[in-house]
Image 1 (tube, rainbow, N blue to C red):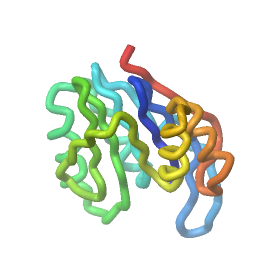
Image 2 (cartoon, helix red, strand yellow):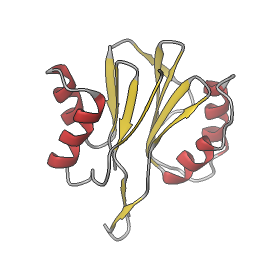
Image 3 (cartoon, rainbow, N blue to C red):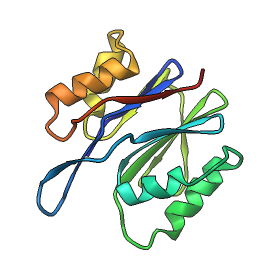
Image 4 (cartoon, rainbow, N blue to C red):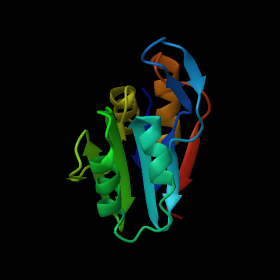
Length: 148
């Protein structure tokens, strides 16, 4: 459970994870990273995000993420957002990315709050703060990475 939002060259996230088994809320850290000239953010499985963060180059990044997801032996629930060469892609519980044509986008349990905030002018970071304030499954600090 999380929030990752993208708008105008900036991808931002919260830092909280919650245990599905116990409901405990833990601080995880940034759920967004910059890999070469690509921005990547993930919600859902912390294990998948750790594997994605090990990628060192944006070259063939969509295929490399697909491979990580395809090799995942557990049935993780996940959303992954990738911004590369001015295009936005999302992996929505699938090894096949879908291109997103909207100017801003969000994934995770706080995505509808973040999308609403961004549609009224909020930046990606501000949208994450809105989700943290109004969604119990979002929390912690706000982290961001940018294309610039």
